[in-house]
Every structure is written in structure tokens, then in C-alpha cells.
Image (cartoon, rainbow over the protein chains, first blue to last red):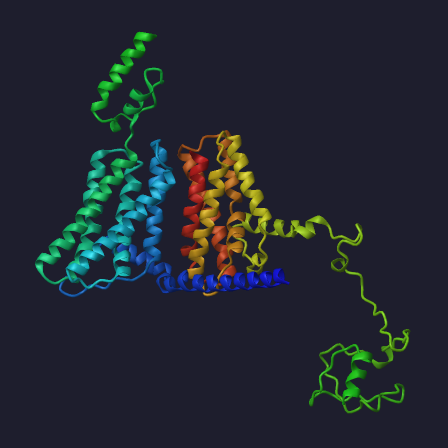
Length: 257
Length: 254
């Protein structure tokens, strides 16, 4: 009798708990609040992609920013794919973690982290911008990064990379800076906000090129010793410092043979 | 009127509606109840059985005991009773080879118009086989990466599920997304089969890879568009599919 009462009680608690959990889940994990930001047409996305490379001239009037998340999200994923491709073609070895995890962490971390930081600065500098608009602006600014990395991961000229960095990266940074300037009042505030954004955006492109495509064969040689056969090398990519290492290993090989 | 109703359920097998515009059928003296129902009109759409063909079933039971009504033996009603009466194993598991073949053909003909209703039933048997076949062809090329294939499939399906739920008017279930993405993996199996014999790292390899990625994402977006009625957004659905299949291609190539 007591066991029956206990079983009924447990049943009630279980059902009640399940109902409350599903209510809480449907309330907080409701992704429908993001639905309006994904309502786009392909033509609109294409127009915004092309506009993200064109700096606006009129900075006395607040420029319109499309509060849309589909384009920026796809651009971040494209950057992840390009990074993965670059890491695979250069045989980058990540010792602590996976290639996919590193690429996703880097790109999403930049997009969300720098957006939040610039939004915080915009709040301090009294700029007229919302979080979704900031996410959208920075996301579309990654279009220049995608183009630059796609070209320079496959054509290995350092000078070509610097030209792309200045021109393409510079254009997309100028666009973001112009939009922010149009929405901020006061010289000091404009300088703080736009200087920070420009520095972070340009330095990120520099970091992506050098950290994820550097061919590190010289270091691998010293770690593995003289018994490793030489790789097929692209001479342009090897920094000057490891030439000495290569020469010493070659000499060691010749001595043992 | 209740008396009439009980008569109707027993003796009249067709459904009729009392309709003002229907024509009144006049029965002669052939049927004993004809005159009583002369006022009712039979609508012409329902299957009208002429009164001469109606049979009154002889009452074979006894008073105060319900008769055994004749029910056709169906497969579902005799589970576990006889070995011969059990349904075939594939039917019980829900694996229908004909449907699997139809869906495979839809994927393989990229220009064929997809029927929106083919993805109503969630069928994960086909996608499982395709993932396994993809892993097996990678194994033949010397890459033991079953874990990567399943992991990327799961994460990719989750991502597409969230995105499609946000972009479509009607929602979509996770099983449907997994099923469609799994079926459209079939051309990628062709790519990895090709990679067993030839290296894909040349110009020809890049062109072939790009073509296969385009084929997979075009088929997947075509099926999603027709199933979710999202006209004009095929490119927007195709691009994330292309990114997902691009990661699979990256596993095949490198």
C-alpha cells in the first residue's frame, strides 16, 4: 500500500519535472527570435556583399546598416572553410586540438568577440549602433578577408599578399570605419572607436595569413633529426633563418651516407 | 428517427447525404422498405448501390449474444501468434527498397524536378548506408576516418536544421534534414572512389571536386526547396550545403 503510494508520487514528480523542463526549454531555447534576421533574398545578399567593399562618402548622415545575420554567418563559415583548406595544403600540424576546432574557434571568436568589444566601446563613445547591426557590419567586413586569403593561400607571393592586405583589407575596413564615423559624434570618440576597429581588422588578416599557412619544415627537421628525407619545398615560403638549419642537416646527411 | 438510423447502418452500405438538390429515386414495390425511404434523396457523388444488389446478411447469431462479425485477417492484428502471420522483417523495420531507390534516382538526376512529398517519411537507412560506403571508400584510399565522417555529418545536420528552421515558414524535422543530406552524399562517394586510383591534388582534381560539390549541394537544395516551399531561395540554401559537402571533399582530397 505504501509502495503503491510511493510509486504514484514518483510518477507525479517525474511528469511534473518533465513538463517544467520542456516549458523552460521552449521559453529560453526559442530560436524563433532570430527568425526575422534570416529573411533575405539572394539579390539582397549579393548587393550587400558588393557594397561592403565600397566606402561611403557621406559621413554627416547616419548610414543605414542592414540588421541581417544570414550573410555574416555564411561569411564566417566560408572563412572557416578557407582556413581549413589553407591548413591542409600547407600540412599545418596542430598539436593541442583539431584543425576544425581551431578554425571554428578562431573565426567565430573573432566575429563574436570583436563585435562585442566594439559594441562596448560604441556604448562608451555614445555611438548609434545596436548589437545586431555591429555583428552584421563586422560579418560583411570579413568578405575582404575571405577574398584575400582565398587568393594568397594558393598563390604564394609575399608581395602579392601585402598588396591584397592593403587594398582589399583596407577597402573593407574603410567601409566599416565610414559607417561608424557617420554614427558617432565627437572627434575623440570617433578616433577611439574607428582606430580600434581598423587596427583589429587589419591585424586579424595579417595573423590569419601568417599563423595558418606558414610552412614550418625547418623546425620539423630539427625536431625529427637527420633521418627524415627532405620534403618537396616551395623555396619562397621558407624564411631565411632556416636555410642555415637546412644546410646543416644536409651536411649531416651527406656525412652519414 | 432513431429507428431509421439503426436500419441505415445495417442495411445500407453506401454513404448518403440528405440533400435538397439531389434527385429523388423512386423505388417500385420491389423492396419492402422502398416506400418508407422515398423521401430521402441520394446524392449522386457517393457510390450508389442499386437496391437490387443489396443483400441482407442473414442473422446467424443467437439472442443476447453478439455475432462474430467478419473481419479480414490483417497482418497487424496477429503479432506474435503465428510465425507465418508475422510481417516481413524489412516491413517491420520500415526499410522500403523501392522508396530508397526512388530517392537515390532523384539525387542522381540533378535536373529532374523533385517531388516535395518524397521526403515526408524519415528514412535513415539509406543515409547510414551511404555514410558507411563513403567511409569504406576512404578506407580503400588509406584514410581511416569513419569518426570524422560521422562527426561532421552530425554537426552539419544540426547546423542545417537550425538554419532551415529559421529560414522556412513551416518548420522542418531533424530526421528530414538528416535524410536529405545523407542521400545527397552519394556523388561524394563517386569522388572518393575516384580518389582511390587517382590523386585529386592537380587541376583536374580541383575541377572534379568543384563539380561534385556543386552537384551534391544543387540536389540537396532542390529537395529542400520543394519540400519546404521556399521559392527563390535555392541559392541561399545551396551555399551552406556546399560548405558542408566542401568539408567532406576536403577529407577525400587530403
